[in-house]
Length: 140
DNA sequence: GCCAACGTTGGC
DNA sequence: GCCAACGTTGGC
Image 1: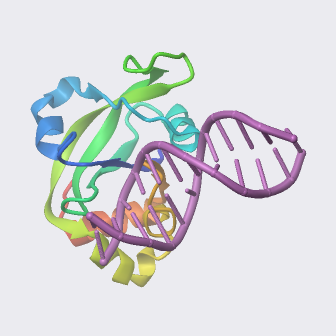
Image 2: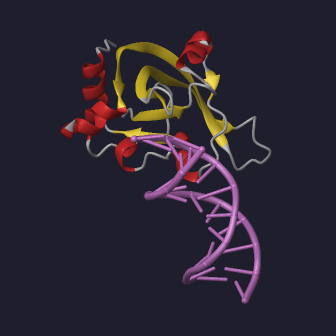
């Protein structure tokens, strides 16, 4: 049973454009130094889908990604403690779904993004995933 | 640029 | 093991 996720990134540090440029090979989602976020990545399976969310600048779901490599040691970390998955871009969100819209949508009021905005890798429910894809005009 | 919320650290 | 202090994140 596939699960859904949300990956948060500041576009100034790592943007959706950069992610897309990596193509099918995908890229390590390095830099996570939070246990909850790490545990979420450990729970991911190959092919799990997720949102690519721009924080600070943009504040919107801008892309769809999928897990292309299971959790492994984060090559940017100096301790074995930290792990990350690889993700690859799958599709654009034609009409990015902004944080404002998410907050205003009763269907999405329980999203982790709304209630614990600081968590950088979050679980998303199947219903939430579907709903945001629909609002964003995403065809998978 | 400010500040609230949260997670982590370290002294006791 | 508690909790105050501190650092970081991210929305505004």
